Length: 204
Image (cartoon, rainbow, N blue to C red; front, side, top):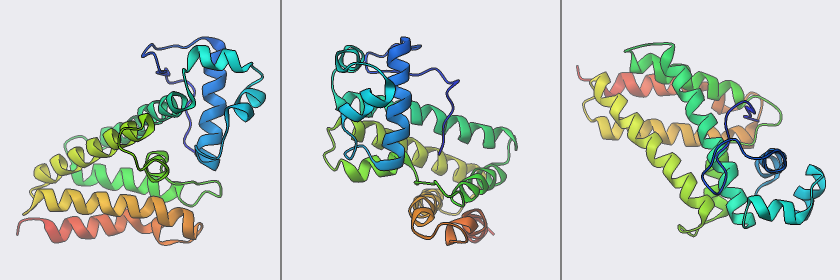
C-alpha cells in the first residue's frame, strides 16, 4: 500500500500539519479506506482504531465525506511524489521517464496487499461527480492525462493525444488487473507494453 507519513497532510480546512489527533485519524482512515474501501468503513471504526472520540474527529473533519477527500488529497501528494521521482531519474527523456514510472507500478502490483489506485477505487465508489472524494480523484486523473499527453508531444509522437490516452488506459488497466490477477499477472509487464505502444506511435 502506498504510504509516506513524512509528507505534510492537507486536511479539509486546507491547512498543513494537522493537530496530533487529526493526523492519527487521517492515518487510520488512510489505511482502512485504501485496504477495504471508503463506503465499507464507518466513523465508529475509525475513532475506535485511532483511540480518539467522535467529537474529536468532527472537529477536524466536518463529515466522513470530507475525511475521504482528505485521505485522497494525501494520496494525491504521494502519487505525484512518486511520479516526479521517476521523472527525475531521466532528465529530458520522457520515454525513459514513463518506463521508470510504470516499472514501479508493475512491481507494486505484485505485492500481496496491493489494492490498485486509491483514486480509481474512489471514482468507482462515488459515481456522483460533485462528491468531495470524486472531485479529488477526477482532478488527479485529469492531471495525469495532461502530463502524459505533454510527454507524448516531447517524444515526437505522430498523434500525441492518442498516445497519451493510450498510456493512461494501460496504467488504469494495470491498477485493475493487479487486483484481479496478483502475482504473475499481466500488470507486471505494463512498462514493456507502454514502450511498445510508444515505439509504434513515434514519427518515422
